[in-house]
Image 1 (cartoon, rainbow, N blue to C red):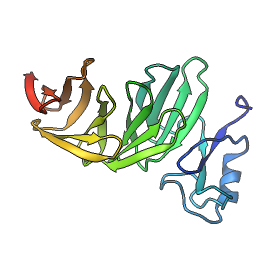
Image 2 (image 1 turned 120 degrees about the vertical axis):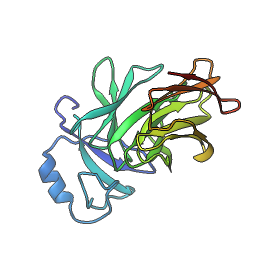
Image 3 (image 1 turned 90 degrees about the vertical axis):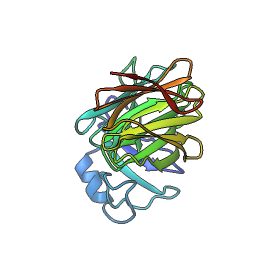
Length: 231
């Protein structure tokens, strides 16, 4: 049962992650070290034994194995997401505080998570410089792409979930990506230092970016031009 379980088994079946394990982590990991490729480089099981119909799998703790970051609350359902230093995205029930699902797809510190406004998609960013988009209902990995930020630090969805903005701690440029295809729409330059936070206005007309240069830039998403700088 969930109350007795200590670890999740996380299989990769066409991008779907789920499962549960109630045994000893070290013993199970040792038995698994026989063949196969890990789901990601940071997976606890580095040579998963072959399983019929399963591309790869690993064992993961229910509780995070390190520092937490990337908190995001679902806009409609009683769910919230945590990321962090163990590279695992965990989706929790905010009423029972039970772990609903563990998502593994990043190979670096998961620094940010963002739900689309309709709650259908979850985007996560990490120090591996990748943005991963997940199906919010099934947990399937929908799309991944290199963010070109040097390490993703902030994400923001458009009001219609068509595009997603990404910025990184090592980049002064803001990148706008078409979410369904993972294609780059626009580079936005203007900040002379790293961009640390992003937000889209409730009406979807403006994108705000805050940076180490102590300024906030307001961008008109219809033209992608800066319309105001707050100092």
